[in-house]
Image (cartoon, rainbow, N blue to C red; front, side):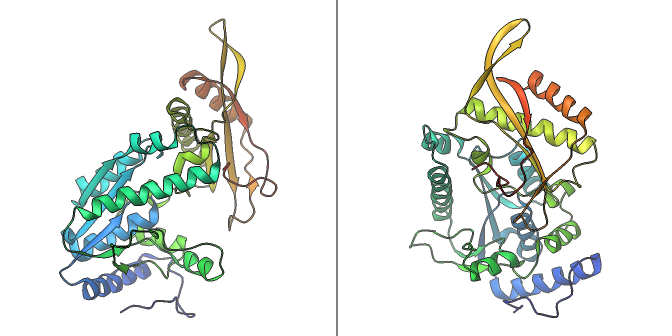
Length: 327
């Protein structure tokens, strides 16, 4: 078996050669651990779970069952990408669950950020457990735990088992093939496994998804304004060469409206707040200096293309005093 802990003398994985050596080592270890039994994986489309899925597909093929739960709070095009990459290209054994209505109905009228997070996390576990109970012979649960998760859990900063809280009747042995890697190493491994660049270098995305970027009670129309404005921001940052330069960038649509004018008529609509920050450890963050002409373009596109929006604002606040996310 491979190490449970990152060896002190482990060389940082920065090259294809080192990544391929790690991949071969993990495939051998997982084959030995799993044998001919089945493994279950909650596949979010984030880099960690995607790399774990790709490793397991190489190691055990159809013995891996991936469950992708669409809670309705993902960014534009993400569920479709998961299906395309894993089901169509990698021929994975993928179960896709569109639970949008279920999640949004539970979140209706809920304004407290922590309550929203608990509802989203709890409902995710419920949906995942329901799908797991339909399957026979699953003995393992794969997780995208990485080394910083373990270090943070040991320091009491957060619990690292990202599928923690599963019901008592579900006892699985864990498979965590990237648990001794740092995030940058996971990305190098993902590239070597042939995952798409925009999946491997996907910017950090919170578990509750767009739910934390729709402050106040989530409504479907305002959530759609977040999703559409975020897609425009990502598209324009890509064109401007900022996609790889800025650590995290996204839009927020708060729950208040202001007066505006569209086509000569008075309108009362939401604003979109753009957030773009750089950081090394997410403990502090600096605001990205976006060129003024790009801001003008973003304002024009968002106010003309996103339904229900008449203003675009830029958040100039570093962390501290602001946090990176809004909730």
